[in-house]
Image (tube, rainbow, N blue to C red):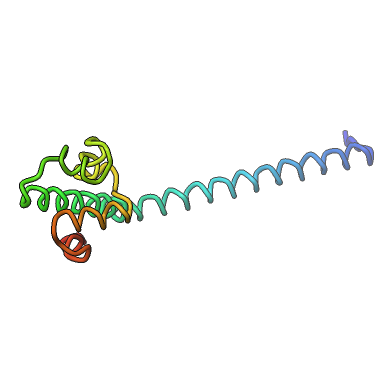
Length: 121
């Protein structure tokens, strides 16, 4: 037995099919963007490691100059008008000194800012 569908039924079925295909396409695009973002994240991992190495290198340079001058973190902090914790964070690489503080550190250690940053890569 052959069953005939009315025009309204065919149109409704077509609309449902179009909505399904549109949702499928949107899901595909979403998956594509997620994969693209993950690939970019994976590729950039070495550069993030290099950025943290630069911060450690700057901190190590600051600590080496302070030790060479025989100064304590407390003395450096009082000389610059910052907290001892700020100096500790600079030396550990947790944060970087501002440009003004970096220039003041160079002056305090008796070196130019260029010499202070020379060992930092």
